[in-house]
Length: 177
Image 1 (cartoon, rainbow, N blue to C red):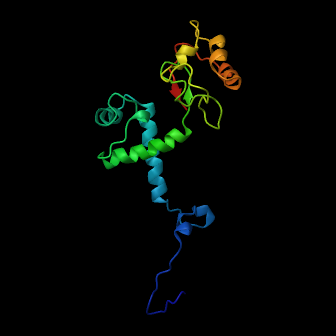
Image 2 (image 1 turned 60 degrees about the vertical axis):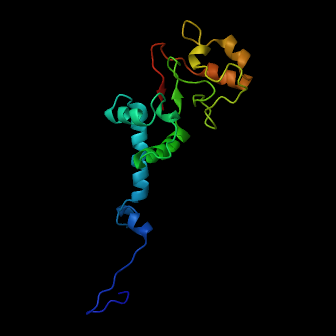
Image 3 (image 1 turned 60 degrees about the horizontal axis):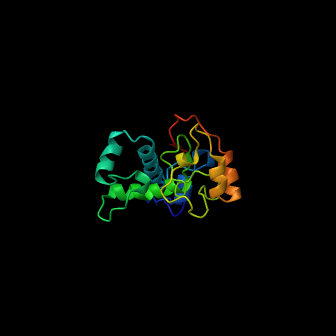
């Protein structure tokens, strides 16, 4: 086979694609280690976002994003390989992350992704209310949406989308999805 003789054995080369194919597809089931590593980096980024009280998050917070949250921390040109990998993974997380409105105190109206419109998840509207305004400012004292304020300051299509978002209990924290 492939140039082998009884006295001399040759290597039977196979493509990486075949080696990485699942066993049920007649491959050897090896994992593509580059893709697997990327998945683990993104998984760690998600843990940083969803477990702010973990030891790893606190250590990274003290070193790299002191005074900021993970999504808004500056990149550090002389940061460690770990930090640069997490910044890369953060980019993938940002592409698909969405905020779920609770109290609305930590979600910025114009910057964060919270609108249920898969094209952008952002409010695309003139910056009328100010860049640092949070969703809690769009609610009335009883915890529901302030319809007059929303209709006055947002385009009609965005006002309708915002008002269609169900308001969770006023004590619920904002979360990520």
